[in-house]
Length: 350
Image (cartoon, rainbow, N blue to C red; front, side):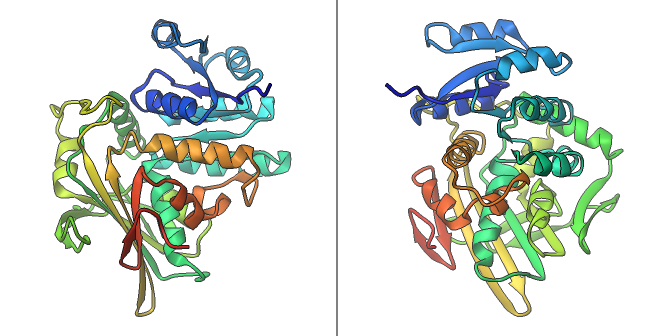
């Protein structure tokens, strides 16, 4: 009899963590529930046969106990500025792969800065931002690049019907703003730049069914870390639909509300990734529902590929660097409907 691989889920009781636990179980893995709050872990484990292992990022021994016997760990607990480094350290001690769903720009940059050499020397695999922000955009840009080895620009436009942020999103945003001293951030001339410029509003030509709509330019997301970590693109720009930007900025926007039995909200999204080299542009598009729920198949597909050896690199690597991007995107159907170069289908063309 085979035993299902055990996957430690740190932050298992959070909004995204619950989706990840459910996806792991559906895919035949055995989640090990972990996080800082034992009082939230026990009800989640009750009656499921799953093991709960409380652990604190301030207590390395507790993290070691949480990861003992696990085949990999996925970190769903923000703010990642606080949790990523301790959980990565624990994964390196355990000799297991690490995946997280961080959308924090600085936290992801810290992971590349502080762990790239150590992880590579150990032959370990650390994949940050394996989520809607950072991971999906990177996969789409990588797929759009195709046989190009470099491009002049990459643009990723987020067409969200709205954005009801979770409590974790709000806390992570506050941490990021504090780290930036209230400044904006963008990726130009091959590096991150911090600024106090007003963000422009412009119209983005989203493909059907969304169509053109106003977006906030330089509404910068984690793609400015993941994409240039492995692709020769000196300009990476991200955009956010005005409605969604207003929602997430408003202090009274409520958290996501379940619209079906799986817990998904009614939010819809369209992510439009465009790369340009000279006068030639290439595009890859993904559309679907609920940015938090769709993070789960992204992270779990990554874990499955890591554990079955379908990877291209070791060290700290982004999704597009370590996985076959078109094949990975195909595997996300039916969670995401994908298009490349204007041809829509339930899967991306390779």
